[in-house]
Amino acid sequence: MHATDDTARQERRPRLGRLARTARGLAVMALAVPVLTSGLGTGTAHAATCVLEENILQQDKLGNVFRTDVKCDNLTGDVYGRASYDSPLTGKKTSALSTFVCWTRGQPHSGGNTVWYYTKGDTAVSPFETFEGWGAMESNKLLTPSGIPHPFPGLPRCPWY
Image: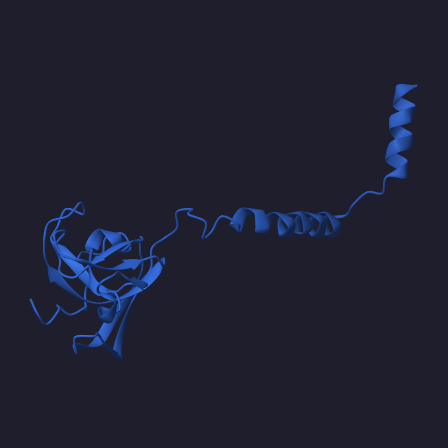
């Protein structure tokens, strides 16, 4: 009797052809894609990206002019008036993608080198608001692609080195 019930159930259920099975599989995958990609940008590890840009024009509040920059994924952190931890804090970097206009040598940091990058902080720190957050960040705050050395190739050294 059990076998008869199974046979009856199979007869009621239509058999799917190859095309229908493929379509059903694609539909299931389409529903899964938002779940698989929803972690991108929420702290999930991803490949770092940096783009060197030339023939641009940026000027800091001290009158320095920059014609090349690198846009990189970065960690948030403090921006210092000079490439040293005993220098005044001039800004804070809160964004995850930022522009860095040159590099300089400074105090050794946890990145294992003395390279610092000049950038404009996302916010200025009192009493240095007139500098609009311009200052130096440690090189280990830039999330450069694997194998790319510091200083970033093609980015000029800062004029005050």
